[in-house]
Each structure stands twice: as C-alpha cells, then as structure tokens.
Image 1 (cartoon, rainbow, N blue to C red):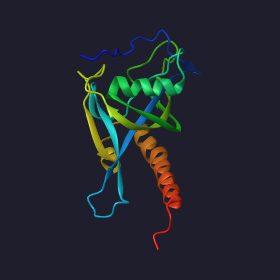
Image 2 (cartoon, helix red, strand yellow; image 1 turned 180 degrees about the vertical axis):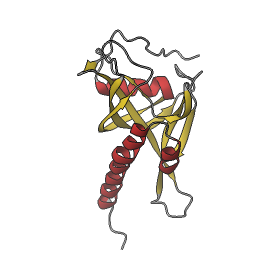
Image 3 (tube, helix red, strand yellow; image 1 turned 90 degrees about the horizontal axis):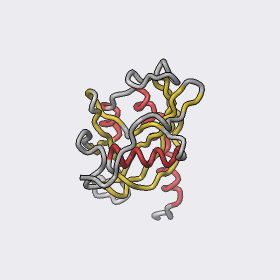
Length: 179
C-alpha cells in the first residue's frame, strides 16, 4: 500500500470565470531506437486508464488554492500515474467540458487545464490510485490513437509534439559537427 494519499473533495478547488482550474502533465521518457545509430531517440509518453470508461488519459486534476499550478501538476502525476520527475515547460491552456464535475461554481462543467511536460525519472512501485489506474508507455502516434479526449490529443499534438520538436532541433544544433 502506498504511503502517499490522494487528495479528495472540492473545498480548496480553484475557479476562474466559471471554469474549474485543472493542472496536468504529459509524462515522457526517451528510449533508444532499434536502429544502429546512437543519435536516434524515441519519445514515449505515459498514459493511464480512466476508471470511468475506455481510452487513455494524461494525469490531471483540480488545482487547489494552497498550491502552485506546477505543484498541482506534479501531485497529479504522483497520485494518478505513480511517477516523479522534472517538470519542464508549460505547454499551454486547454479548455474542455467535464460531464462528471459540474458544481455551483461551474454549473456547465467548464474546465481550463494548464498542461506541462514532465520528464519521468522514477516510476513508483506503489502510488495512491494504483488500485484503479494502470500505466502504459506509448509512442506519440500510439498515444494519439488511444487518447480518450480531444483536448488531450490537442495538448499532445499542438503543445507537446511541437515542444519536443523544438527541443530536438536545439539539441542537434548544440552537437559538434561530425565531419
């Protein structure tokens, strides 16, 4: 059993203009490609199942008023996916409508998610939601195919993919010439 405990309840939830504020991340790692070239790295992202239906998700949840948005994203990665690492860059805000989280402050279930890239350094053996969540490492194309929500596909395609491409380009520019 995990010593960590997931937060529950809505008493500290943040709202802005009728939207519930959410924080999440796209956990990722690099894997060597099967090719002989040592410069080819494959980016894999970590997704989790949803206890409420088919398809895979990225860890995300309510941003509470006693934490920064970055702390909330890191907390959600630990609670839902059981991973720790380095929270890198902000990928953007993504709007969606929640069917399950409608309340007095957001009667229509409107949500605004701040998403980050999280470089995974550790996979925990036990974590708060391990009894209801399974982890899956996927290539980016597999993740797009299996992603449950359109807004998460948008975060992956428009935010994360472009961010990775810019990091790969700058890393190549930093390499010495191989002449």
